[in-house]
Amino acid sequence: MNIFQKLKKRYPTAAEFIVFFLISNGVTVLQLVLMPLLKNFFGMTNLVNTNFQVFPIGSNLDGSRYFIFDYMSGAIDSGGGGGLAYFLAVQITLLMAQIINFFLQRNVTFKSDTGIGKAALWYTLAYVIITLIAAAAQGLYKAPIYNLFMNIWNMGKVGETLADVLTMGINSVISFWVFFPIFKVIFKQKKDTPEFSAKVKA
Image (tube, rainbow, N blue to C red):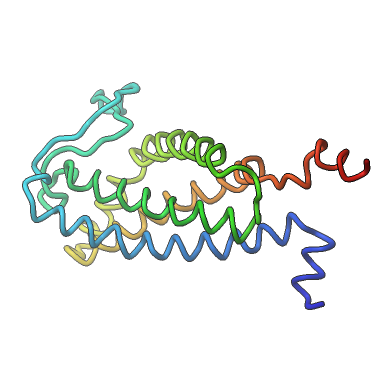
């Protein structure tokens, strides 16, 4: 029995967290590569000039409206917010990453034998809620990060790409810490449930 198997036997939750951490980091790398590529692709279309500011939830310090999804029209290097192009780049990246994450975490990390339909339903619900929370939080750090790299440090397009990676990285970290306890609930094994245990004892 190797060290990891011993750890898994004695500390199953810790072992699950290690596997969860490794898979999540792999998925995060995928997001860090994919999002800037999609952003550049959509940025070559007129979508970048399509305003996408929805779900107002209050006001900024300057009195302007605070949106959960705040993607003002115009390219970021021209003072805009990336428009619908940026929104699609972020959300398509997140969707693809979470689909991959769902199956890997279910089958590899938690080795769940519960119904995939029910797990997928709860996962989708959690994904939507976390996406809304992460999007709302992005309004606090997105503009300052791009301003720092592109204007204060005067790094231009390179700074914009670095800001892309950093903002997606922050988004991934938020998802990482929220999803683990959720996975523990929706990916339970049937053999761990009281009903299963009772049947085995009988």
